[in-house]
Length: 169
Image (cartoon, rainbow, N blue to C red; front, side):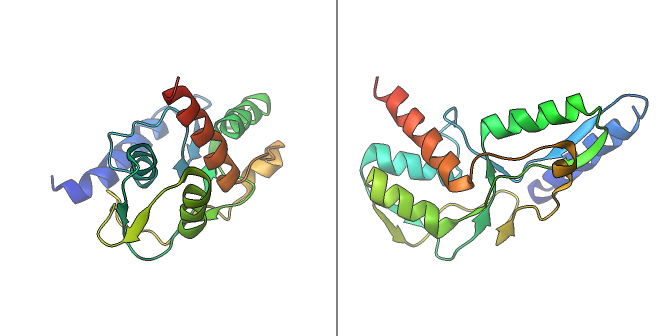
């Protein structure tokens, strides 16, 4: 199977497996972007590349252009799971933060607060293809009482602060 089609196939197989257990109360939570202090910086992701740039102190290459992502805070994700459990929810819904963030806003945060040096050039490319806007407009979770407390940008700042503090111990 070509590498470019594996993600879709795995997703399809997981969906089929879930549907086979319709007597169970399964919840599919679609997570558009997730970032935490436990990130593996050896993997080729946008956020790990930024952290490697901060840690190494050398200029990194960033692919030109902007994009928008919604990074849910780990505490908000836990709260969403609890809401699903407490309301006996069964089905699919999207995870979301108080507000999504642009690539440019993330770069500004890393430049201003963490001293990231970057230049536009060849950089990180998504394994699942480029997505300009990757966030939800479906707020079904509100019906379960879910209300996120953190924006994507604040989540990135909190988790980066903890990551760097723990790394420097």
